[in-house]
Length: 197
Image (cartoon, rainbow, N blue to C red; front, side, top):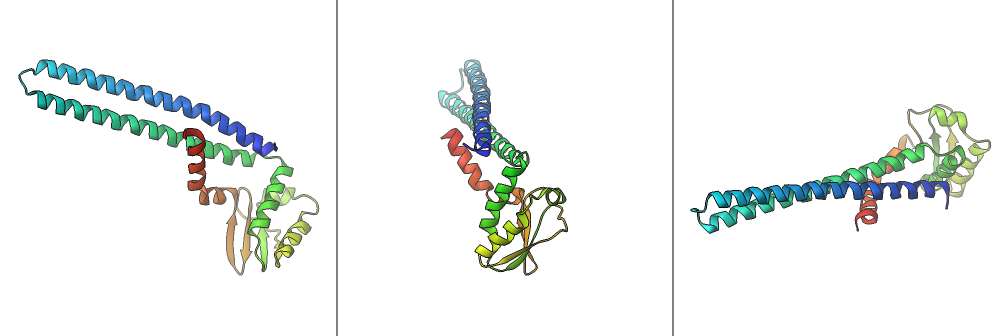
């Protein structure tokens, strides 16, 4: 198991525990609301014996329905908070990767996003200062395998991580945040299945 897989596994384990805690808390709160609602409804029924049984039953049903809706809403909100927290922790783990793992990921991203035409690649100032020896040649080799070419620009872009590809004046944002944002729905679905299935 790689370091990144271990980090992701640890984040998922922590998230499962956090999710379970939040969902249990939401369930307890919802059960309390249902209990209070039942008690209130029963008190009203006792105080209004002269009212028809139908009115009392309808009121109790509305109160139960409302309490159940509040319970489901609280559980859903807790689940959404847990999923958002996991996504942010996963993103943060990318920013704390060691240099070797970071540039290994950049290589994989280049293999995926490089086009078969001439272009330019831009990094952040921090990444330009830590590019490994021979990496510029690796960039060229990866582009050549796709039938294109990439020129490493020494001017930095205002990005946190990842890179920007420019082909024919059109920029393709390959930062980790941009990739996370394009995959957010898919990632949320996977996390939901993993934690709450």
